[in-house]
Image (cartoon, rainbow, N blue to C red):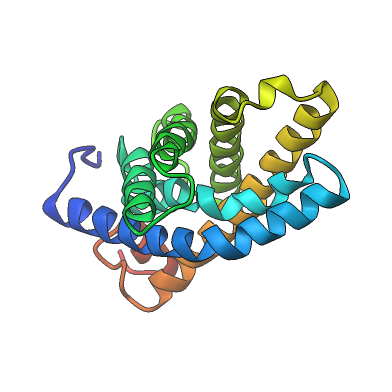
Length: 195
């Protein structure tokens, strides 16, 4: 039976993943926000399709570390890095990271930290998107917007979470694993066929 206790290497790699995701978020704060605004101008709510990259940290953390708290930890570290480097959403960036990380974490917990395949990654991305939706109901506040807007936005967040966080996150883990960078983790050993 594998240990659910965190090793020093788990903490270090989770922190590095959080830092890397935070840097990705900073870049996405400009590019993704432009995409979000363009989609919103086409149909209100479609902007949710651009959000998935901001959900990536929790999915990566869960897929690589595979221990309780990893998805949450990586997403929150990423949000703090994004805030520190000047996110236009200020402290709400961290609050978003908290709920998005909890969403992803919940999926890995539901599978008892034993399933790390593509469908699980996609579900974690969807749950992170639902977390973002719930937070934004009150912080933006989207609750004041129409039912149609919120329905479109929620569906778009879920699609984006599944694809941009789940599929892209899964592909990133496999790519990192093929380099040997994750050989200290089950995610790396599985891809490289090392026992």
